[in-house]
Amino acid sequence: MNNTDKDEPYFGRGNPAMQLEVVKAMGSYVYDANGKKYVDFLGGAGVGNLGWGIEEIEEAIRKKDRPAYVYPNFHYKPWNELAELLAELAPGKLQKAYRMTGGSEAVDAALEMATMYTGRKKILSVEGSYHGNTMGALSIGATKKRKSFPNLLEGCEKLELPLNREKLDRVKKLLSTKDFSAVIMEPVIINLGVVIPEAEFMKGLDKICKETSTLLIMDEAITGFGRTGKMFASEHFDIEPDILCMAKAITAGHAGMGAVMTTLAIDEKIGGEIGLYSSYEWHPISVDASLAALHYLQKDQKRLFQNIEQLAETFKKGIPEVNFRKKPEVRIKGAAIGVEVHEEDYALNIKQKALEKGLLMNTEGSSLLFLPNFQMTQKTALEGLDLLKSCA
Ligand SMILES: Cc1ncc(COP(=O)(O)O)c(C=O)c1O
Image 1 (cartoon, helix red, strand yellow):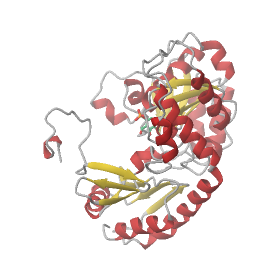
Image 2 (image 1 turned 30 degrees about the vertical axis):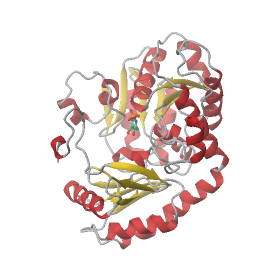
Image 3 (image 1 turned 90 degrees about the vertical axis):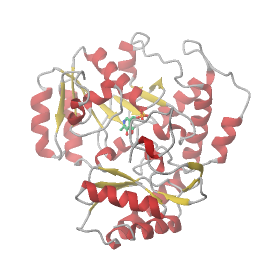
Image 4 (image 1 turned 60 degrees about the horizontal axis):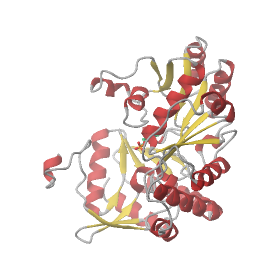
């Protein structure tokens, strides 16, 4: 499939298009221009944690009494309000929120912060990971991308999977050089098909970071705001991130935005000097959307998190009933569901068949990736799983 499949003579794309022209998205369903309805296990790749068309968020966006734009170096009260709310939701000692337009920018800013704070140049990340599309984010992401972008930052070392106790020796060897400003990873690696690091690895990593004064950056662009069944996936482990990246579900998909949170100690050293500025950071519309989305999540947290648990059970039970070519490996953390089907072509084939039958999903290599929203009913989840059965 390439860009000429659809009539888009003026419109550039970085990735091949899926044959689906969206006209409406509501609750757990997406509708195309022919009126066909799709069960949404894709969730806008993790953006839509609450489902689509949330009235409270739509209403906040429609509100008219706000400035069209606020220059980032002015004061604007809702920025403080949102920053305070993020500090309330964020784990550990993370208190200061920096304004970003999205996840890639948040990751680059986090790397800059760590480099400036420690004065060290190297970064340690996880091989094959995805942290966004800017040069900084690509530098710490999958090494194979280097072939397309030879000018990526030097000094990025990668840890291979599995992330277990044995891997700590390598971490110690590298970080003991004190050349590394930070380790960056997703606490649950959704972008590798929901890879869950061993608890002992995470605890050991945190300890080695502290011993070597290396910062621990958790990229929660996709895991944040409840996706794994905790407000932030870092909370599954005994760790204290120094910097945490947020994006995607920060507005539940209703406007573009991101954030980087850090501690007071780090902020004291670099704040006001690091020069992080972008024209559209925390645009007033995005801030209203985010406040509404996060208040909704906070207010209904108990109900939503209970439903996440139920969904996890439904998928845990339903996936083994699908007749895949080989027994799949199922990895579930809350509403992040990875199904390793062992062959990339097979995974892509299932995704394509599912699209034709009315089920949306993502793939990561040879894994299927399902990111249902937290309000998806049991009935809809079963409807999707039934469709999946006919695609395997
Ligand atoms: C873990 C992670 N980091 C960063 C990004 C980049 O975010 P954005 O697409 O908002 O730039 C993504 C997007 O998929 C992500 O999953």
